[in-house]
Length: 164
Ligand code: 4NP
Image 1 (tube, rainbow, N blue to C red):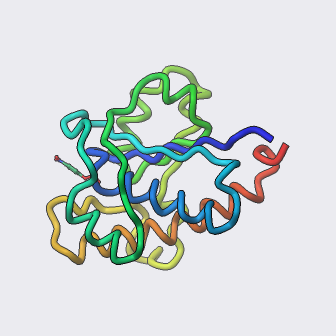
Image 2 (image 1 turned 60 degrees about the vertical axis):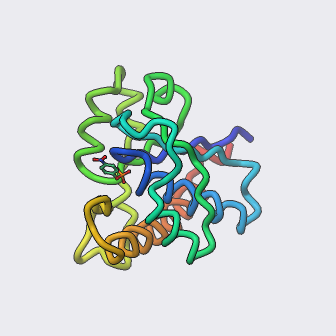
């Protein structure tokens, strides 16, 4: 069975997408599926290259027992070939990714994190950027990310394309 490769993408790759990477990594480990997945994250903006996730995100995530150790990196054209699923945190990320995709097939790999939000669906169909927010912004981002990752993983597990 081939590995399912998922790339989470936000703007800076220091708040939302490394958190989503950490949440999804723990989910696949809890379900005994880690060997079947490759999970990574990247940003559309390169200014934070090499940095650990924002200390505020690391602090809030660690309270939920996530240890975020990813080093920020900008997305590359190779990523569009390598990964099967590219998950945008918000509409701006999606637009940037769409511009970068060089084939229809690459473009078809882009999905919206917001499509997997169920619990706070009435209020959020994307993961708001917490960078300029206070503690509530980081807690909200983590709540949305945990919900969406759980639902996304369920969909992938039930998708015949990934179970060949
Ligand atoms: P992220 O948050 O896209 O969730 O990593 C941001 C991080 C940095 C900046 C904006 C958003 N920034 O403007 O530097």
